[in-house]
Image (tube, rainbow over the protein chains, first blue to last red):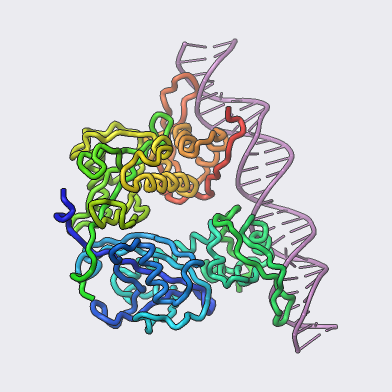
Length: 236
Length: 236
DNA sequence: TCAAAAGTGTTGAACCTACACCCATGG
DNA sequence: CCATGGGTGTAGGTTCAACACTTTTGA
């Protein structure tokens, strides 16, 4: 079989760019400027160009949309979507990447991304028709992946700024899991997990309360032991 | 941007078909009949056809190679590989699927698959140049996925025949993890995990020893609590 | 009766949840 | 001084690895 005879198709990447803002897991969505689905909200994405890997393309789009330095972010390929009818323009296979970001002001997003806005993931998922194409399914998969990853990996730190307190880290877990965690037990678990957190020796300027120690993310990627999804009974 | 202007490329699926045979994790490999890499071992694969999803294509190839009824097997998309130089024929993005099979005689594999043979995954991984294209990396990822999945999911049962003993199930774990497990503790853990194993009431005809109870796979897909990678000290 | 494999009981260590309590700061 | 949030101690329960022990078969 010669390659010229094969059904050709376009390959795209789409990005689920997630952060924790305003006590919620939020996703960066754009408003589509052109048909199909003109004016509809969608995950940022673009086509794979010649000579580029999928990861290159994901990084390129992520830089375009956020203006951030991509090298220190968590960007991970999740799944390829291939339903023949998923895009009315023709046969397009799209590969979803998930990017996890701290809550930073996005430096003047370049490209055609002027309309990029943060939206609550929970709200978007509650409206199955609000996102274009099969992006609702993509976001569902991305959020589920983020939720699971918190238990077994150290990715929660990628939602935090370079130096953070344990309470900030706990807030990431609480927001993404939708559960309150016992502050004291959480503190012990994460400080005991090897290579997860590195103390900087510094402390926060406090606003009413004992100042908190600041930590940086450690070299570990897997979490031992895993953090379980304990639900705290003192929840209001 | 019109789709006609986009860089087109071919999309393929490759299959890591894994089973436990002869006390080893083995993968089904074919000998390539045509260039490139003619005569070299490779994972089975093929191109995505018009109107087909990636999953359709993976099922089609799996049926071709094994002749088995695909509906009861564990087939899961793992990763898309996109290095521009990965195939000398041109730009081909390939999506890897992992299939986990019990050790069954393969009913007369049809298609061009006459040369399909089982090979030890460990041996293949020890020879980074033995597999064509980037299939060594694919197999590495597939084996790592299988290993991790055993801890957190019930996929181990897909390596077993429809009815199996706990010792057979344990052997799956021991072979894939490369570690001996304590038979008594293993027995308790898997029988206690909810919806993992369903007793059939039947017992094996024994060959020197107490007959073992036979089980079927239960409806659970996640394993609670997870099986840890405990290394047994009585290892020879 | 012995060997072999299945399966159960038990013990001490590790860990976890819940909560009491102490610490450090601002007002 | 008190309020607020950070952080530690600890008791009681659960789980787990390790291994002794019982059960059920074939030879």
